[in-house]
Length: 251
Image 1 (cartoon, rainbow, N blue to C red):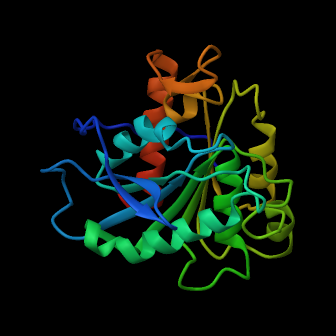
Image 2: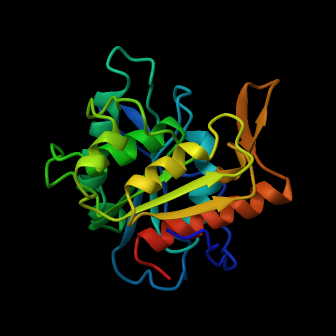
Protein backbone atom coordinates (compact mmCIF):
# COMPACT_ATOMS: atom_id res chain seq x y z
CA UNK A 1 0.00 0.00 0.00
CA UNK A 2 1.24 3.48 -0.80
CA UNK A 3 -0.01 7.02 -0.33
CA UNK A 4 2.41 8.50 -2.85
CA UNK A 5 0.82 10.82 -5.38
CA UNK A 6 1.03 9.96 -9.10
CA UNK A 7 2.46 12.53 -11.43
CA UNK A 8 0.04 14.69 -13.39
CA UNK A 9 1.33 15.61 -16.85
CA UNK A 10 -0.35 18.27 -18.93
CA UNK A 11 -3.49 17.10 -20.72
CA UNK A 12 -4.42 17.97 -24.31
CA UNK A 13 -7.74 19.69 -24.80
CA UNK A 14 -10.72 17.40 -25.42
CA UNK A 15 -13.95 18.13 -27.31
CA UNK A 16 -16.70 19.74 -25.26
CA UNK A 17 -19.48 17.42 -26.47
CA UNK A 18 -18.75 13.69 -26.33
CA UNK A 19 -19.89 11.21 -28.90
CA UNK A 20 -22.81 9.05 -27.71
CA UNK A 21 -23.47 5.39 -28.44
CA UNK A 22 -26.27 3.26 -27.05
CA UNK A 23 -26.50 0.00 -25.17
CA UNK A 24 -29.31 -1.99 -23.50
CA UNK A 25 -32.35 -0.90 -25.51
CA UNK A 26 -31.17 2.60 -26.25
CA UNK A 27 -29.51 3.64 -22.99
CA UNK A 28 -26.85 6.32 -23.68
CA UNK A 29 -23.12 5.93 -23.19
CA UNK A 30 -20.66 8.79 -23.66
CA UNK A 31 -17.54 8.05 -25.71
CA UNK A 32 -14.41 10.08 -24.92
CA UNK A 33 -11.63 9.35 -27.41
CA UNK A 34 -8.00 10.46 -27.05
CA UNK A 35 -7.47 13.74 -28.92
CA UNK A 36 -5.74 13.44 -32.28
CA UNK A 37 -1.99 13.38 -31.88
CA UNK A 38 -1.98 12.01 -28.34
CA UNK A 39 1.16 9.95 -27.81
CA UNK A 40 0.72 6.19 -27.99
CA UNK A 41 -2.61 6.18 -29.81
CA UNK A 42 -1.52 4.89 -33.20
CA UNK A 43 -3.13 1.49 -32.52
CA UNK A 44 -5.94 0.26 -30.28
CA UNK A 45 -5.80 2.06 -26.93
CA UNK A 46 -6.70 0.91 -23.41
CA UNK A 47 -10.35 1.27 -22.44
CA UNK A 48 -11.85 2.60 -19.22
CA UNK A 49 -15.50 1.88 -18.47
CA UNK A 50 -16.44 4.45 -15.85
CA UNK A 51 -19.60 4.08 -13.72
CA UNK A 52 -21.16 7.10 -12.00
CA UNK A 53 -22.65 7.02 -8.51
CA UNK A 54 -26.10 6.59 -6.99
CA UNK A 55 -27.83 9.49 -8.74
CA UNK A 56 -29.81 8.19 -11.73
CA UNK A 57 -28.52 8.96 -15.21
CA UNK A 58 -25.58 11.14 -14.18
CA UNK A 59 -23.01 10.29 -16.82
CA UNK A 60 -22.58 14.03 -17.39
CA UNK A 61 -21.16 14.37 -13.86
CA UNK A 62 -18.12 12.34 -14.87
CA UNK A 63 -17.39 14.23 -18.10
CA UNK A 64 -14.62 16.39 -16.62
CA UNK A 65 -12.76 13.32 -15.35
CA UNK A 66 -13.48 11.34 -18.53
CA UNK A 67 -12.07 14.11 -20.72
CA UNK A 68 -8.99 14.40 -18.55
CA UNK A 69 -8.43 10.64 -18.72
CA UNK A 70 -8.99 10.52 -22.48
CA UNK A 71 -6.31 13.16 -22.85
CA UNK A 72 -3.86 10.66 -21.42
CA UNK A 73 -4.43 8.16 -24.23
CA UNK A 74 -7.49 6.25 -22.99
CA UNK A 75 -10.81 5.45 -24.62
CA UNK A 76 -13.27 6.31 -21.82
CA UNK A 77 -16.86 5.06 -21.90
CA UNK A 78 -19.38 6.48 -19.41
CA UNK A 79 -22.92 5.02 -19.43
CA UNK A 80 -26.06 6.28 -17.77
CA UNK A 81 -27.49 3.79 -15.29
CA UNK A 82 -30.14 3.89 -12.57
CA UNK A 83 -29.66 2.55 -9.06
CA UNK A 84 -33.38 3.09 -8.43
CA UNK A 85 -34.34 0.17 -10.69
CA UNK A 86 -35.90 -2.84 -8.96
CA UNK A 87 -32.61 -4.71 -9.41
CA UNK A 88 -30.49 -1.83 -8.14
CA UNK A 89 -29.10 -1.20 -11.62
CA UNK A 90 -27.61 -4.67 -12.01
CA UNK A 91 -28.89 -5.37 -15.52
CA UNK A 92 -27.80 -1.99 -16.89
CA UNK A 93 -24.33 -2.14 -15.35
CA UNK A 94 -23.64 -5.63 -16.66
CA UNK A 95 -25.09 -4.74 -20.08
CA UNK A 96 -22.82 -1.70 -20.21
CA UNK A 97 -19.81 -3.87 -19.41
CA UNK A 98 -20.70 -6.41 -22.10
CA UNK A 99 -21.28 -3.61 -24.61
CA UNK A 100 -17.95 -1.98 -23.79
CA UNK A 101 -16.13 -5.23 -24.56
CA UNK A 102 -18.03 -5.70 -27.84
CA UNK A 103 -17.87 -2.09 -29.03
CA UNK A 104 -14.29 -1.25 -28.05
CA UNK A 105 -12.58 -2.41 -31.29
CA UNK A 106 -14.87 -0.32 -33.50
CA UNK A 107 -14.19 2.70 -31.27
CA UNK A 108 -10.42 2.27 -31.43
CA UNK A 109 -10.06 0.50 -28.09
CA UNK A 110 -8.46 -2.73 -26.96
CA UNK A 111 -11.00 -4.87 -25.04
CA UNK A 112 -8.17 -6.96 -23.60
CA UNK A 113 -6.98 -3.83 -21.77
CA UNK A 114 -10.31 -2.79 -20.30
CA UNK A 115 -10.24 -1.16 -16.86
CA UNK A 116 -13.49 -1.09 -14.91
CA UNK A 117 -13.77 1.98 -12.69
CA UNK A 118 -16.49 3.61 -10.66
CA UNK A 119 -17.12 6.52 -8.33
CA UNK A 120 -19.09 6.35 -5.09
CA UNK A 121 -21.73 3.61 -5.46
CA UNK A 122 -20.31 2.88 -8.90
CA UNK A 123 -16.96 2.14 -7.27
CA UNK A 124 -18.42 -0.62 -5.13
CA UNK A 125 -20.03 -2.15 -8.19
CA UNK A 126 -16.82 -1.95 -10.23
CA UNK A 127 -14.71 -3.62 -7.57
CA UNK A 128 -17.40 -6.24 -6.88
CA UNK A 129 -17.56 -7.32 -10.52
CA UNK A 130 -13.78 -7.35 -10.85
CA UNK A 131 -13.16 -9.58 -7.81
CA UNK A 132 -16.20 -11.87 -7.85
CA UNK A 133 -15.36 -15.51 -8.62
CA UNK A 134 -18.68 -15.71 -10.49
CA UNK A 135 -17.78 -13.04 -13.07
CA UNK A 136 -17.41 -14.71 -16.51
CA UNK A 137 -13.91 -14.61 -17.93
CA UNK A 138 -15.08 -12.68 -20.98
CA UNK A 139 -16.44 -9.89 -18.76
CA UNK A 140 -13.71 -9.69 -16.14
CA UNK A 141 -11.70 -6.48 -16.55
CA UNK A 142 -7.94 -6.36 -16.71
CA UNK A 143 -7.93 -4.09 -13.63
CA UNK A 144 -10.37 -2.15 -11.46
CA UNK A 145 -10.37 1.30 -9.88
CA UNK A 146 -12.61 2.21 -6.94
CA UNK A 147 -13.05 5.94 -6.38
CA UNK A 148 -14.38 7.23 -3.04
CA UNK A 149 -16.62 4.29 -2.31
CA UNK A 150 -17.68 1.95 0.48
CA UNK A 151 -17.21 -1.80 0.15
CA UNK A 152 -18.97 -3.25 3.21
CA UNK A 153 -22.43 -3.81 1.69
CA UNK A 154 -23.63 -6.21 -1.02
CA UNK A 155 -23.19 -5.01 -4.60
CA UNK A 156 -26.22 -5.03 -6.89
CA UNK A 157 -24.20 -6.64 -9.67
CA UNK A 158 -22.97 -9.67 -7.71
CA UNK A 159 -24.93 -9.83 -4.46
CA UNK A 160 -21.56 -10.08 -2.72
CA UNK A 161 -19.78 -7.81 -0.25
CA UNK A 162 -16.40 -6.89 -1.75
CA UNK A 163 -14.75 -6.79 1.69
CA UNK A 164 -15.91 -10.32 2.40
CA UNK A 165 -14.85 -11.64 -1.00
CA UNK A 166 -11.35 -10.22 -0.65
CA UNK A 167 -11.04 -11.49 2.92
CA UNK A 168 -11.43 -15.03 1.56
CA UNK A 169 -9.29 -14.87 -1.57
CA UNK A 170 -6.90 -12.47 -3.31
CA UNK A 171 -8.14 -10.27 -6.09
CA UNK A 172 -7.88 -11.91 -9.51
CA UNK A 173 -7.02 -8.52 -11.05
CA UNK A 174 -4.95 -5.52 -9.93
CA UNK A 175 -6.88 -2.99 -7.84
CA UNK A 176 -6.36 0.77 -7.55
CA UNK A 177 -8.21 2.66 -4.81
CA UNK A 178 -8.67 6.41 -4.39
CA UNK A 179 -10.38 8.50 -1.73
CA UNK A 180 -10.54 12.14 -0.71
CA UNK A 181 -9.22 12.81 2.77
CA UNK A 182 -11.88 15.54 3.24
CA UNK A 183 -14.75 13.31 2.06
CA UNK A 184 -17.78 13.99 4.31
CA UNK A 185 -20.14 11.71 2.33
CA UNK A 186 -18.09 8.54 2.66
CA UNK A 187 -15.06 8.97 4.86
CA UNK A 188 -11.69 7.66 3.66
CA UNK A 189 -11.81 4.93 6.30
CA UNK A 190 -14.12 2.98 3.96
CA UNK A 191 -11.39 2.63 1.36
CA UNK A 192 -8.69 2.11 3.97
CA UNK A 193 -10.61 -0.96 5.21
CA UNK A 194 -10.55 -2.49 1.75
CA UNK A 195 -6.85 -1.73 1.29
CA UNK A 196 -6.10 -3.49 4.59
CA UNK A 197 -7.82 -6.63 3.27
CA UNK A 198 -6.61 -6.36 -0.33
CA UNK A 199 -2.99 -5.85 0.64
CA UNK A 200 -1.73 -5.66 -2.95
CA UNK A 201 -4.12 -2.83 -3.86
CA UNK A 202 -2.59 0.55 -4.57
CA UNK A 203 -4.14 3.26 -2.39
CA UNK A 204 -4.08 6.97 -3.16
CA UNK A 205 -5.50 9.51 -0.71
CA UNK A 206 -6.12 12.92 -2.23
CA UNK A 207 -6.61 16.24 -0.38
CA UNK A 208 -10.18 16.89 -1.55
CA UNK A 209 -13.80 15.95 -0.88
CA UNK A 210 -16.26 13.41 -2.32
CA UNK A 211 -16.98 15.50 -5.43
CA UNK A 212 -13.49 16.87 -5.92
CA UNK A 213 -11.89 13.47 -6.50
CA UNK A 214 -13.75 13.32 -9.85
CA UNK A 215 -13.03 16.97 -10.69
CA UNK A 216 -16.46 18.28 -9.65
CA UNK A 217 -18.09 20.45 -7.00
CA UNK A 218 -21.43 19.67 -5.38
CA UNK A 219 -24.01 22.41 -6.03
CA UNK A 220 -26.84 22.27 -3.45
CA UNK A 221 -29.13 24.42 -5.61
CA UNK A 222 -28.79 22.02 -8.54
CA UNK A 223 -28.59 18.97 -6.24
CA UNK A 224 -25.87 17.77 -8.56
CA UNK A 225 -22.13 17.71 -8.96
CA UNK A 226 -20.95 20.25 -11.52
CA UNK A 227 -17.54 20.81 -13.16
CA UNK A 228 -15.06 22.11 -10.64
CA UNK A 229 -13.30 25.44 -10.65
CA UNK A 230 -11.49 25.12 -7.31
CA UNK A 231 -7.80 24.27 -7.34
CA UNK A 232 -8.06 21.31 -4.96
CA UNK A 233 -10.72 19.59 -7.10
CA UNK A 234 -9.01 20.30 -10.40
CA UNK A 235 -5.72 18.91 -9.08
CA UNK A 236 -7.42 15.89 -7.50
CA UNK A 237 -9.29 15.11 -10.71
CA UNK A 238 -6.06 15.20 -12.68
CA UNK A 239 -4.51 12.82 -10.20
CA UNK A 240 -7.48 10.47 -10.48
CA UNK A 241 -7.12 10.53 -14.27
CA UNK A 242 -3.43 9.69 -13.85
CA UNK A 243 -4.35 6.67 -11.72
CA UNK A 244 -6.82 5.48 -14.38
CA UNK A 245 -4.03 5.68 -16.93
CA UNK A 246 -1.65 3.85 -14.58
CA UNK A 247 -4.22 1.09 -14.04
CA UNK A 248 -4.49 0.77 -17.84
CA UNK A 249 -0.75 0.30 -18.17
CA UNK A 250 0.12 3.79 -19.37
CA UNK A 251 2.90 5.80 -17.77
